[in-house]
Image 1 (cartoon, rainbow, N blue to C red):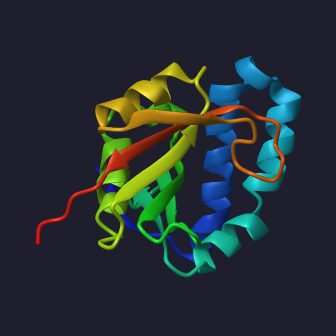
Image 2 (image 1 turned 120 degrees about the horizontal axis):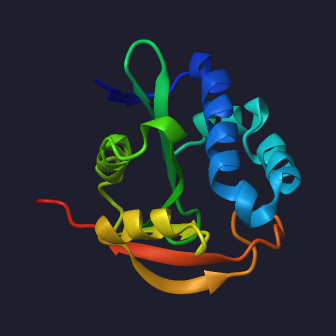
Image 3 (image 1 turned 180 degrees about the vertical axis):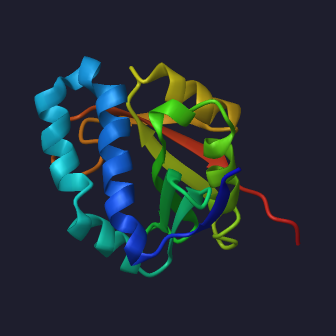
Length: 168
């Protein structure tokens, strides 16, 4: 059984490796293995993950069964829109999909930002499994970007949002 907990610096090599496996399994057929390796080397490097782990107003969690990291999620408050939290990453080991790990990771991240009114994410529209997953969590399409992930990536992405509600 996997438990969701806050990530630590010691988890980052395993998280980086998980992201590489997940990206190759999902995106090689869409972008090609070479482009995926290039993206992974940049976006999922230890330095990049360390910056995310240290970012204020963010949450970086992993699903851990005591033997392996089965998934990870990272979200952070928008620097300009103070009521928006961005779900930047939510990935599960390819051999563990469909076991509820993604839902557990999302459930944890969703509760970490009580001042947020909306959660936003970008997803590759050709990744139909991810689009269905997010729609099942209550996300709806609100737009498109030509630079998913930022930094002039030239990777198109669907923008999805979910209205958050907290008791109170």
